[in-house]
Image 1 (spheres, rainbow, N blue to C red):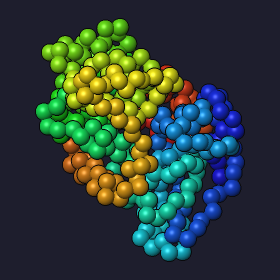
Image 2 (cartoon, one colour):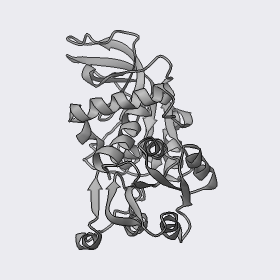
Image 3 (cartoon, helix red, strand yellow):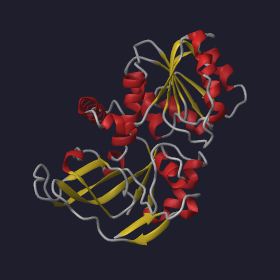
Image 4 (cartoon, rainbow, N blue to C red):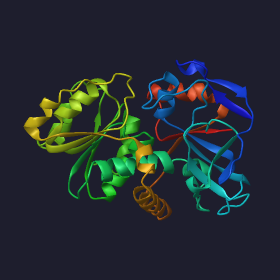
Amino acid sequence: MKAIQFKEYGGPEVLESVQVEDPALGEGEVKIKVTAIGVNYADTARREGAYVVPTPLPFIPGAEVAGVVEQTGKGADQFKKGDRVVTLIGSGGYAEYVVTKESNLIPVPEELDDENAVAIPLQGLTAYHLLTTMGRLEKGETVLIHAAAGGVGSLAVQLAKHYGAEVIATASSEEKLNLAKELGADHTVNYTNQNWRDEVMEATDGRGVDIALEMAGGDIFHETVKCMRSFGRLVVYGVASGNPPQMYPSGLMNRNLSVIGFFLPQIMKKPVLFEKSLKELLKLVNTGELKLTVGGVYNLDEAAHVHEILQARKTKGKLVLKP
């Protein structure tokens, strides 16, 4: 089968199209013919050798796929050939076929196409748990959401509004800020402006925000800390800039601030968290209360280009590859 693989860490140019053996089907597993692949910052971190956990070489990235059940292994009897499913996997998603445990599969509602469905597992669950599980969002609080036009950000804006929050959204262009407004943001701020922190504070009448979702790192992290009000919770879920911030915990004490790390695989280990949140997300999508934004659909061979435009902040919404 065709797959996109890298044999060394580096920029988008290390991604190459290769022919590899189809994945072997084991007991309790299902083979899926892939129809849509979600592209995420985690994929670029894998490629750069900068992910939260080690990335062995050679490596086929991709943790989020939608597709059709092709074959089921012994003991896998909940799904049949032809069923449409979406799933999270550890790796191997940039390919024509993947194999995963049947218990990891999520049925795709008939009214949802594959390109939209593939946004739910990783980015939908991330947005949900950033706000609720880690941020402990309460109705009436103010939330600062960076990269609000991206895959996670666009969903977080809508979820925060759904739960009764006031939302301040940041992005790097007017087009992206307009999207955030359309999704329900109360205030928008261009974080490329030098005084963006002042704009956030002005929007809160100088009080600061209760919760901030931060995935850029570097100066954005430090300026975001300054935007927090007393008892604020800053939830970190990435370092897209490639510049991990240095933090001195003593600097959090005077305002009783919390800086909280988030890694979705830890959520997946707790069925009580995973199953409830997934059901709620699917319900919101089915009722139209949560809109999924697809920013572009590309051929699998264009993976390097997609990584390039993702990291250049030239995209909005969910980026999808198709074999």
